[in-house]
Image (cartoon, rainbow, N blue to C red; front, side):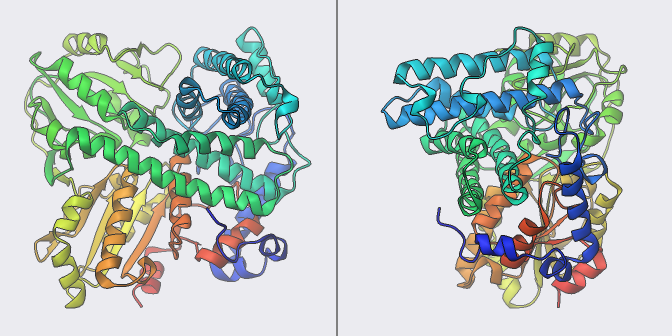
Length: 590
């Protein structure tokens, strides 16, 4: 992808930390960015340092224990796996140039990189196995292509890295290759490298999901490897790194598209569906995470056993898929809210719990004997389900009390993905033209624990009644059960789906722009986003690659962005932090 016009080395060099950004997004916000990156640079070069998520300690970086729950041991293993993947990717790219390509390598890289995403895997032994496997694959493809380090365009210890024999040795190796292991790199280049790395983790997640559904694109595998090599490359300058960051956004759109195809081909396009928030008498299993195939297999294996299956977190939108909701009558309702509330909510669930893909937190004693992981998710001491055999989960559910009686509750609406919304596009267009619909807001993204996230439900509460609110991802759980009424029969609150259904939201925006014969930035549409982990980083890069502007982002801006890089985003895309609901609505609805 060609570089976005206007983003150049000169932009970065000439950006002033008290100039454009200070006037556009406010000096306090800019100060936080400056302080955060400065603190990162001043930390001891070795040891734990992580700032890949929004909740990073003190807005600077986690150095003793991750806010997500990972300890320095797991953090070092994450870093070492990324280090090993860089070496594997360098050889895979060089081998491809010689006509040698390995399907096992291609599929392994996104799955392994996804394991390092926030709240996925906390099990040291699993990382030890992944690191060993990475080096084995590196040596396999190196031999296949007849390569040596001298044949490669990059240099570095990752090309010849040999893993230690035990976890403690691996941890020591990992402490040498973390995010701050290259102190000589120019801060702005390092910032872009980290933006790219975290974006690659998000792309890997969606690529892995799509792959499980049988949908792959060789260009995604090549890009992930190319991106890891770019992060490793000590010679790559500002402008090529900017190109790679924007390309990451473009490739993430492709990954989300493949996942969308995989889900809709297998389960049908989501349709409007009312989902009960109450409970039904009987044994119970709760499924959290994102993966539809895990849910499907559990539904198949638990059918006819007197067990009702409930969703939690980002599994809520799965109730809208026709081939899930119509085929399995024991697929009942939704329990709880977002991932960050699980430690309180899971204590009240009277059945077995299955964690898929990511979002796990340290299990509490009240339910640690009732919870299972599957896929890439791992926690030390928690039983892990392999090969989609959920017999242990079902057995545990039958042992537990379940619900002793029906419990009435609210219902919420899901299923407003692009097909549903575009089926009433004529009404939306007519509403905009006749002024019955003044504006459309996409209030979407991740949830988390910071008090500033109260902004989002307050914002939705204050949105005028002549405006629509689209939402997706787990940030919606702060307002998902609100009754906002409707406009001409169209619900004012429309749940588009999971975080990856940002693809649907983008398609809705593109279709509306086409109908109005204008650009997306000219629509009466505003994006008010919250972020937490690396999938959100990848989605933001997708929006930038599509040249979507005027995005409001919160609850805080990333600690891994330097003031100069921030200034460029402000200048070229008018990215701004959230302020207050009243101020932002006043600014938007001028």
